[in-house]
Length: 117
Length: 117
DNA sequence: TGTACATATGTAATTATATTCATATGTTCA
DNA sequence: TGAACATATGAATATAATTACATATGTACA
Image (cartoon, rainbow over all chains, first blue to last red; front, top):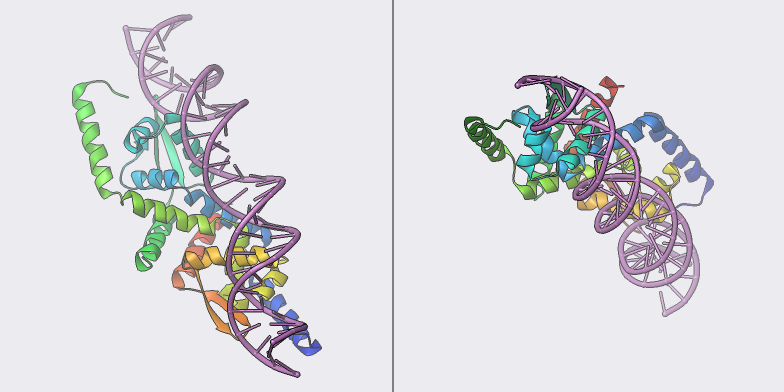
C-alpha cells in the first residue's frame, strides 16, 4: 500500500513476525479439514444425536430421515476425523462421540450463533 | 433392527427423547454454516493472521501470497459469519477478529488435531 | 475534479462434496 | 452353510464453493 522504503521494511518485518506465530501450513490445512467435517448439517445432526445416546447406523438413519448409505458415508468421515468412535456388538455397530472436544466445539459454535442472531 | 413390538415401542420413545434434546433444524443448519466458514484453509490462514495484528486486505493478500480478490471474497464470508469485524481509516480498511469465540474455537480445534496425530 | 490507491463485486471455470442406487462385506443363528 | 439383518463401499449425478479475471465502487489529495 505505501511506497516508501522504510515503511516497506517495517511491513516486511511485521509480516515475518505474524508468519512466525502462525502454525505451519500442514497444521492449518488439518485444522480447516477438521472444521470442514463440522460444516455439514447432516453430520452436525448425527453428532447431536450421538451426544446423549450411542446409536447404530440404522437408528440414526431412521431418526434423521436419512438414507442408510448416506449415514454410513458420513459416519466414515466423522470416524476418520476422530469425532466419533464405534463398538461392535454382534451385527450392530454402536457409534458414540469420540471425546469431549466434540461437545465443546459444538457448544462454542452454538454460543457464537446465539450471540449473533 | 429388532422386530418385536415392545422393542420398537422403546426405540421410538428413545428417538423422540433424543429429538427433543436436539436443537431445531434451523439452528443446526446455522451451526453447520458457521463451521463451514472455518472449513477452508485460506480463511483459517486469514484468521490466524488477524490473531495478532489487525491487517488490511492488501497486506493479508501479500502475506498469504493470495490474490486480492480472493482475500476480499473470503473476508466477506468471514464478516457475514461475524468472525471478523472491520474499521475504515481513510482508504484502508483494517480487519480484526470479531470476538473471543473465534480464538477459542480455533484453539479447541488445534487441541483436537494435536491429540489425534 | 481527476488521478491514484484500496477494496468490493460479478462472472466464469475448475474442483470438491453430498446423496442415491446398487452391491459387497460382515455377523448371527437355525 | 445359507438365510436374514446390519453396515460399508463404489460409481454416478447434482450441487456447491473457491479462485482468478475484469471491472466497479469508494476515498484521499493535489
